Length: 403
Image (cartoon, rainbow, N blue to C red):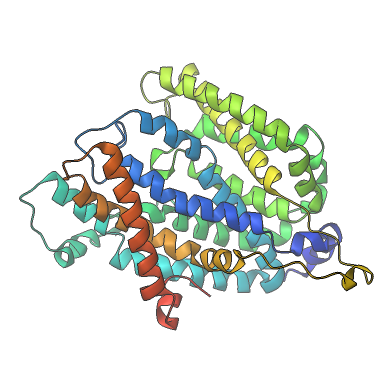
């Protein structure tokens, strides 16, 4: 099925690309764990309509949050695309689809039926002190849905229904299923020209700029259009197929870092000075803001992935083998534990943050104290739930997408 693409891709993808890349695991963990800080901050954000809001808010959260919005979720999609290329090489298209349905579809269904409705229920309780509907009763109203094809790939709609923070899983599963039958036809071997200096930074940025300008930005999906995320996913798929792209990312990382910082500052100025709805308006000002934002996002990704990437050390020679072996990093078991926990922690984090915030906003304490308390308690509960309720049994591991 995939034999037509396997041979040429193996010729351009060396053994280096098949080695484990610990920096990708680290980036994924930084994003997932950083979402606890991010969503806890939205409780105090002056602009965002989060599930639970503190009486006192500040506009500073918007600017700090923007530092993560510009690169964090795009990084997850790009890394997922990288992993998908390797997965298709090992399993073939059918095996890849089956694996995605098990690892993404099962936890999506399970979480939607159990914990995803929690933030919506707490929103109603926070807005109306007299609201006393039990969670099981609200769950029945939450699941009162109908099929709606106009918001693809979000096919279910209802008065209270939402995918919540699992929009990422919905998009990732949809992109994976869309890509699998087309994978054999992607002419990756003909795209090596993209690795040239200048081209590597400009062409992907231009594609993202076109999508952002024409389709706008979606606040519900962390500020990017869902179709921009599809581009990031495809970028990752293509980047994994040829080590020349990886070398180009390392080569251009410093230039991208400077350009990304300048463009991010420009994005802040343009979005902050725009009237109306800069995410969706088709005015010159709003389109300019989205163009700069999209370019900044690609530059930040190139900078982060390129600066963190370190080529694997060459194999030890026979002479070197007489030297005493270097000690394994002490944090290796911790990183392995966290890497396996990434998806379950992502699924668990938002209901827990909202539940903690529901009580914390009532405390007579300064904002910073409440914020730190929400973050600390959310992490404690999240890791306790993962360690005690998820990772220890085959059934719960399966339900949360763990191998």
